[in-house]
Image 1 (cartoon, rainbow, N blue to C red):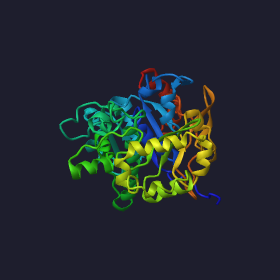
Image 2 (cartoon, rainbow, N blue to C red; image 1 turned 135 degrees about the horizontal axis):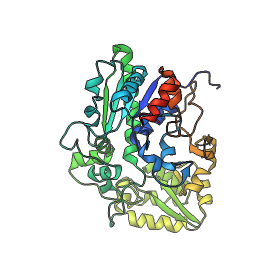
Image 3 (tube, helix red, strand yellow; image 1 turned 135 degrees about the vertical axis):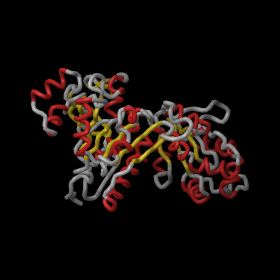
Image 4 (cartoon, helix red, strand yellow; image 1 turned 180 degrees about the vertical axis):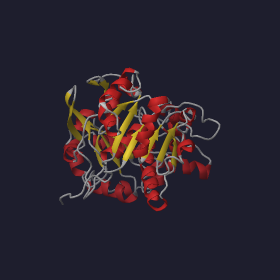
Length: 399
């Protein structure tokens, strides 16, 4: 079906004051959906992640590229004086502001939500912090792996007889970003009825605790800590990594129905679902080592491709590295890797958007902006001439 509409958030203006992952990814999602996202950065250093580490795209790190596509950038010291006046002019046109400074920083400059609420009544003001704006830990800084440890999430990871392990990507930051987008959209929707904006506040700690989901609910009901299960699952069996003749595959056929189909239609062992040691989820869990040994012996007789051809109707797939995964047919078919033109590095690859709309497409992708790439354009839009812009740049207020 041909798409006839514009991206769904065209017309929404967002000021992105955030850095690193959670806030920038939240704003990137809105930019993908068509919002005009203006990244307001320190005029000298920009977002901290610009200088993170190699590999680079031009002067900026791969880290910065990951969370800042489809945005414009202005270098602006908005803390006081003329810079603050410029910032207020930007806010007058904005629908959304996203910031992830430590609680108290914005209030120090008179830019916290209570200070701005009356003047910018329609503004949706999103604040993201490690521990929230209330509570005994609100003054503490915090990064994703620390929250993984403190929330209990890390206690679930790793092999049963090994130490806890952090998730290798910043999963709490990523989940916080996605929760933030949903909350901001809800606040914009509510504004249609009330005519008023509001503050949306998210804490990484809250998101990390919520992410405990069914494992956490199990503890709340039983008082028992779930055991680490490595590549398997604390309850469902067989869910695990298995070794074929030429590499590993992952299978999740834990229900009685799926296990029966797997045994009868894939490995030709109709006896296993009838065996009292394996005929129920609980029995398979109790006898997991024996079952895994049987299955590994069977899987070792064929290649991954041979097994997965027989298991197309079941939840199973190859263990792939980045090169295999990102060059796979499904990633190409779904457009999840895009090539864009970077102003300094030339053509670079970025991830696509996982969002798909039948009538309102996501926008055409652009690389993350250079620091201050749109300063002059933005300043002209809010009424400054070339001489004023040059003077402000000389004073270090803009870049």
